[in-house]
Length: 110
Length: 114
Image (tube, rainbow over all chains, first blue to last red; front, side, top):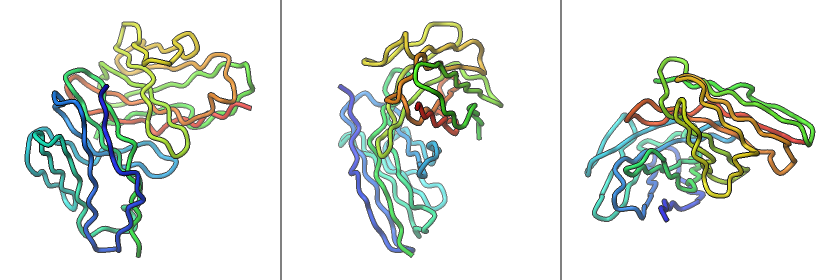
C-alpha cells in the first residue's frame, strides 16, 4: 500500500519566518515528488517538483529530497500571510498515478 | 503554465438526477486525465484515471457504473455522476497531464445534491 504522510497541522509561523513542511513516503521506487498549494475552496496549484536528491530552489521556496530516508520537505522563506494554505505532498512511482498526502495546513501570522 | 478548465464550476441538482462535468486541457494535449474528489477538510481522493480512447481505470471502492468517465479526445474528459445522492455532494477536481509531465489541476466543480 503506497502511503504519503504529512503532519496535518496547523503549522503556525510568524510573518517573515521560515516555514518547514515535511513529507514521508513508503514506496521506495517513487521517482517524482511534488508540492502543491491549495487555498480553501480552490483546487491545488503546483509549487515545486523535484526528482533527484538534494535541494531545489525557486524564489522563496526550496524543496529538499532524501530518497534514502524517503523524505521530502518544502521550506518557505520570508513567509507571508498569503502563504497561508494547505500544502499537499504528492509522490509518483513508476506508474502514472500520484499519491497525495493528507496535507499540512500552514498559517502565517501577521 | 498549462491551463485546465472545468465546467461547470458549481452545480446544484436534485437527488436521482445525473450531472455531467467537463474537463478540458486548453493549451496542451492531455494523454492522461485524472478525476479526484475532495470532501471538506480532507485530502484529494483519486477516483479514476483515463487515457484518451480507452476505458478509465477506477480506484478501489469507486463505482464505475455510477461515475461514468469518457476521455473522448486529447483535450476533453467528462465525468457523469449518475443518479446522484446527497452523499455524492463534494468538490470534484480533474487534472491533466502530457506524457511524462506533472499534473495540472482544473479549478474544480462543487456539486451539491439536494
